[in-house]
Amino acid sequence: MKTAIVITTVQEPTACVKALADCARSHQLPLIVIGDRKGPEQFQLTGCEFVPIDKQRELPFRLAPLLPEKHYARKNLGYLLAISRGFDCIYETDDDNAPTGNWKMRSIKTSAYPIQQRSSATWANIYEAYTSELIWPRGFPLSQIRRTFADNFEVEGGLVQVVAPIQQGLANGSPDVDAVWRLVLDHEIAFNDSQNTVLPRGIWCPFNSQNTWWWSEVFLLLYLPSYCSFRMTDIWRSFIAQRCLWELDYELEFHQADVKQTRNEHNLMRDFDDEVVGYLRNEEIRSILESCDLLPGKQQLSDNLRRCYEALVRAKVVGIQELELVNAWIDDCSRARTP
Image (cartoon, rainbow, N blue to C red; front, side):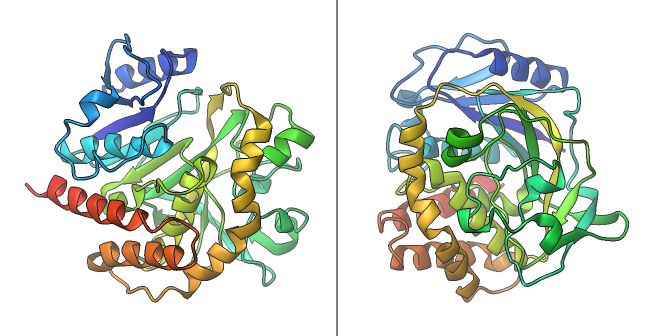
């Protein structure tokens, strides 16, 4: 299996990126680093391929000139570079996450404990399967945080073998949570080493771009939207990806923390402002996506992705400009995978 690592950054190599580069070299993995208008101008780190914004515009992808500047969604170009080079797996993370001793190469086939519903709840706070602390992932509806995992779900039976083309690892230290949690409860977190878990069809949980593995079966679902809040781009992607996974008969896997985040400096009130649209609309987005008329099978994946975005555009969740980018992304992925 050929695996590439993709990150984006606007700063010189952080301590976390240096640790990531060491890990990449030890596993002989390429590390693709996507810059932005803010920089950096250079990225001196052995084993890294840094792609500044001026070189991004020269890439042979329809999406390249369409992506807005100063946006996390420029990471899409890193995905396309990896896809066009024939990689079977993409591991993505951020420039403030460093691999720990638990980090290892993963396989699309894995053993995990299935999560079962004990109530009519549709949102599962996966963090509660790995800690007893009050904490929830960014994108989890605030209306659901008092509905505990134990009251609504159970990890039932023994380990089962699953094919999971999207796998989300947790992060210790400063995990990916929303601004409300940071403003009210912020402290260091150490998740326990519980076994892998999988979410079946109909159970939702946001996942992020902090520590995530993607296999070629679902590379199309990597697409990060541009015409939405910066703090929602990877979260709303995760909702679309989950909805499309169901039509492929795949499940979403979560596993123990194998990175530690030393968080970059953030303005929490700015984060809060960027997240308000999610606090207000994430439950609505779930309902919209559940109502989408998608078709089963891998051959339908492109159309299903389009249908999800068309539904969100109709609801004015994302801007209508997004559809041009989605179509360019689908075309780029198709050409990139053609021998």
